[in-house]
Length: 492
Ligand code: GLN
Image (cartoon, rainbow, N blue to C red; front, side):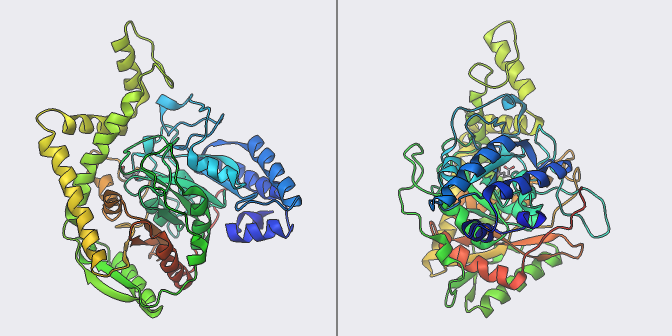
């Protein structure tokens, strides 16, 4: 059965249609693998009964010749997405008893297309983090290890559980959310493909909100083609999210393997940051060479406001978070800590329910929005955001079709290595990803190689608004050149 878990979504789709195996067998193979991999803590909830029932329904539809686009494909769902009658915690104590009565639009579209739910995956609390270590449910251990070492590594974050599940063959694909890099950074750390689509491409309805002007959903997969397949089901206009855009969803899969000849690829010089490891620089050069060989033209570009992206992000995101998280008050749903009066109830519930990083973000956010500081911090950060967006617009207006950058400034680090007194150490991880959220653009991370210690590294491609298709074409060139990467199994 083990080879069933190593299939791509495209191969599983073909196998199911040809009746080489059933959706029930495919789901069962994954459930067994999940049970053996509990040491990774990738799932916070396994849903075997639901998986069996959904797979059985898929088999019935396949038998009748009524298979939908994702019929029988077993997936993991990040615990930021509400799932009807299935506990949804956002990785927080304040929601650890929350069972939504509805599905997020994105997950409901996956079920509409026949996908099978395997379980809910771990994430940083309210998706705040870059290592999955802020989760109330404990950290996720990466399936990857450095050569000859047992040191447990982080899978990246905040979608660490989804990334680890896909890398360790505990799901054929998974959903993630990306506010400042939470899909692309864990994808890079685990040798998986992750795409954050254009802001507005996927509905945010039913996804636990972190920073609403930055949040987007996207898939994790083991191939570029699979990411194209999943995004097509996840994307689309939703009247329940007024920021979702009413634009037809293209057949992304058709772009996989399309020629990239003549495309102009920008190399933003500001992404050559101080102290960048030589291996990252080398990987970036390699990526340029691969795309050039495929007929693309490399052009140096300048995005002069890049250096302000990280500080501006860490004002805008906490500001929006402090407002979004005001709803967790112990009254409507989630944790309730009894107290003598209503003020006491709010205080006790929020003090107990939120972890340290979430409390830090609420305090930063409240501070930058407060009278007297609003103009100096929040308003200025919004202006910087406009300038960052303008940099990209200027580059695209000059004829650039996409940009190539490293996805992360380093390979995965050890659990506990960056959780010291200075939170900025962790924040620096997002240096190459936050710009894309600030500008609302699509970005994909594609595995491009291994570092000297045998850990995966990713390259990021940034596209024009709503031009995910070009990212899939370019991503496939990198995948063809670099190959795919699978960790050696050390867990049971
Ligand atoms: N690491 C970033 C943060 O902590 C981004 C997280 C995300 O994209 N959800 O805010």
